[in-house]
Structures are given as structure tokens and as C-alpha cells.
Image (cartoon, rainbow, N blue to C red):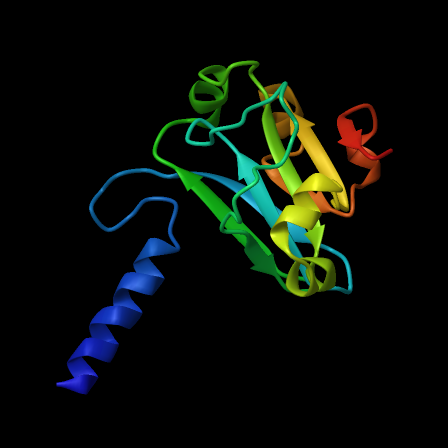
Length: 152
């Protein structure tokens, strides 16, 4: 019984890694890429977020941040093309926040939020994402010159 569960679970993981899922629907992907030698955490503000750009504050309640180890990637998927999803946002801008892992793990979220303890914040338009081929690197690279990245 355990073998069947393991095989089924493995098949679902493999199939979910595809651009087209096993049920036939297509996913559109933004890749968050950690090119640093340290673990980071990230958070994106999208259409489901209570705060959206141009408000760049950080939520007061401890959100579900995603850990990303050194040299690792995370794939953010959407069933809609990203240009549609981003155009539905209040200001046509997707905000991505990057946090130092040690700061996040060793601090109370209210302190992180109140003191705005971020490594970087990217405010990206669909044009920015297209220029990056939907791969958002940390730390920022030369290709991101002229994009809204804070602190500078």
C-alpha cells in the first residue's frame, strides 16, 4: 500500500512540474531565482493580497513566506497569462519582497514589518517581467537596470 501511495505521489510531483499539468490546463510561470550564497525568503503581492502597489507597506500579520536556498529556484504559477493577472492589479505592478533568512527566522514579524527589514523590493510591470523572460533574480542583475528596485 505504501508503494502505491509513493508511486502516485511521485507521479503527481513529476507531472505538476510541467508547464501543462496532467489535467490538461496550462500554467504560466514566474521563476524566482536565488543567485546568492545565502538562503532568502520572498513574498509577492498579487491580486489575492490585501495590500497592493502603490502601497508598499508590509502586512502586519505574519504571512506565509517562501524559503529559497542558495542557488535555488521557485516557480510561481498562474492559470491565467501573467499580463492578464498583472493588468487586473490596482496599478499594473507586481511587488516582490526579499528577506534575509536569518532576520526572518530570528525576529518577530511585527518588528520586521514596522522597521521594513527587507533586503530588496521589486515593483515589476509586465514589461519588466517580459524583459526578464519571467525570471526574477536575487540579487538584482544588470538586466534589471532602470527597474523599480528598493533600496537602491
